[in-house]
Picture 1 (cartoon, rainbow, N blue to C red):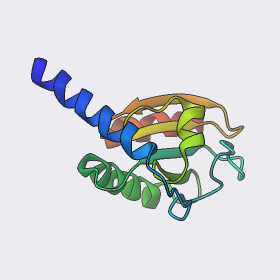
Picture 2: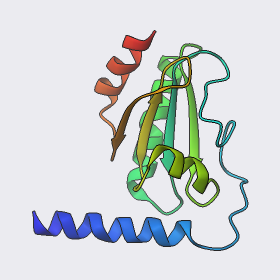
Picture 3: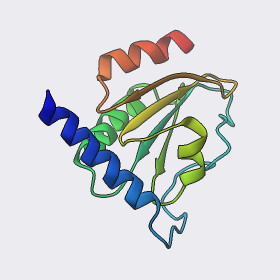
Length: 129
């Protein structure tokens, strides 16, 4: 348990230090960064991620599978720590990967940190359809 807490603290420090790094250019964030609303009126999944984050790669792969399975029903967007600190702050995201689920009106209806369970996430999204 102590080791797990230590790992979480180290990851939090890495996230914070990368967020404070100069030169954030805004080139990788996909979608309408910072607005927090779904422009399509569909539920939306926001993946808060950063470069060099192995769990983020796994989360990205899971979301890509869901994106294919739920094509046209749910919008998906990745937001990079290096590029869009304002949106991280808006949702209170402190670690990556973090998933935020928005309803069709752009309201946050769920947030979870870590690699998501694909079936659980899909179930939550289906409730919004």
